[in-house]
Each structure stands twice: as C-alpha cells, then as structure tokens.
Length: 208
Image (cartoon, rainbow, N blue to C red; front, side):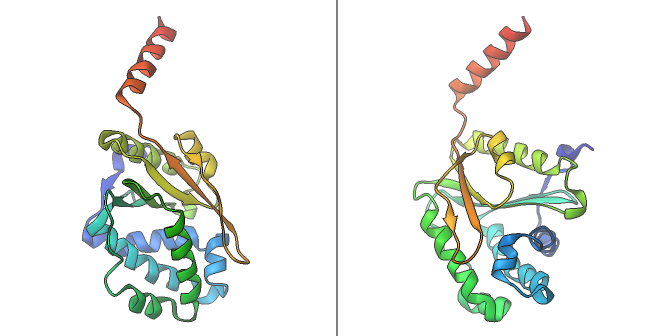
C-alpha cells in the first residue's frame, strides 16, 4: 500500500465525504459515546456537526485525504472566528446533545495554545482500513508540511497518543470531560534546520 502517493488536498466537493469518513472513525469512540449516548442518531449527528467544522477548515485551514483517511487542521497563526452562525447551526445539528458539544468546545479552547500554531483537529482512518498504515502516512505528510512553515502543532486525542509520540508530539496536561473520557492534548515543536542537519550528519556517520 503506497498511501503517501495518494494523499491530496481536499476540494469543496469532498467535504461531505470527509465528514462521513471522520464520523465513521469517531462513532465507536468513548468521546462520541459521551457526546451522543444514543447510538441511533450518533453517526448522523456526528456527520452534521463535523460538516460545520470541515466547511470552516476550507476557509481557515486545510484538509488532506485519501480514499480511506483524512486530516483536518486550522491555521491558528492569528485568532480566527468561529464558524458562521455556529450556535444556531450546532443546535440544528446536535439537538438535545448541543450542551455536550458546548462543553467540549470550551475545554478545548481553554487548553489550546495562545501562540501562533497549527491545530490538527482531526486525524481519522476509516475503521475497515485501520492497521494499513494510513494514519502513519497522513501524520508523516502533515509533519513534513509543518516543518516548512516552522510552527508548533497542537492536537488532542483519546486513543492514538503512541502514534503522535512517534512523530514528535509530547503530552500536555489532560482534559477531563465531566463524567466522560479523558482527552490527551499533545504538542509538537517544529524541527529546526540545525536539528535536521545534525540528524542527517548522524545518519551519514552511522552509514560510513
């Protein structure tokens, strides 16, 4: 599987596909269960709420995808506004579960760095494709782009902290949801040019 060669930037026409893919990946997670305890409407609500944020990322971030995986991020190089008409749209999408999404939004905003950074909001792999290397390929692609702009990256995960650690992310103080799961924010500092040169030199020395 050559996942790297298939990674591309998303177009507007991809937004529904990306929302459905991430919803499928999130659906069985402790976070999704906390947000929407009833499994009946869970996938629909997740897809609708995710659609708001994916549309927002088209204007204030970037989305990269393959057929089976996607990353969604925001360019928080400066303050960015919330999605247009967010509270009304969230209430329409989440209905009686809106309060849980509000709590999550507030806690993430409180933990998020205040300095310029890139926020990796979602890294998702279709459940039927887990273990095929898509997550590793997507995160490596994301990392290579970050080092070109020289900014730290911030994300929050419930299950894949080992994957992020292998790509240079370090843990931050956890976020404990009320009567819910614990989220694990992680931060990656950009790799400096000097660090890259030292790494290349060390690799060459080992090969000599």
